[in-house]
Amino acid sequence: MLGDFNRRLSSADAEVYREWDDGEPAGLDLHIAAEDAGARPRCDNAKYASFIDHIVLSARADAVLVPGSFAELVYAETGDAQPSDHCPVSVTLKLD
Image 1: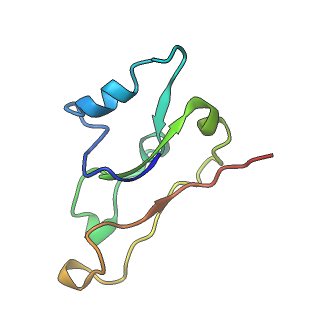
Image 2: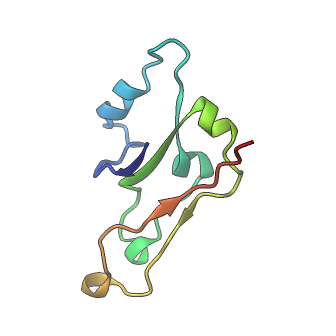
């Protein structure tokens, strides 16, 4: 899953993420790509401490994630001149 969640999924109060990552169906294990990469937002001069746009991977998808591939596109403009208050995030998956 990826997109603008408008939530800080890795924060202690991220109840919605805990509901998703509850192990059901059996064996389901989710991973937040930015968190797994140890990444911190740089969008708008690192205005926020954590991401609200996420890529959430299943264990199977996480297994084909290219290490170090998490990236955030940062705009040259800042503040009101920035095209959006969200910066796109991406990962690379190596599929056979």
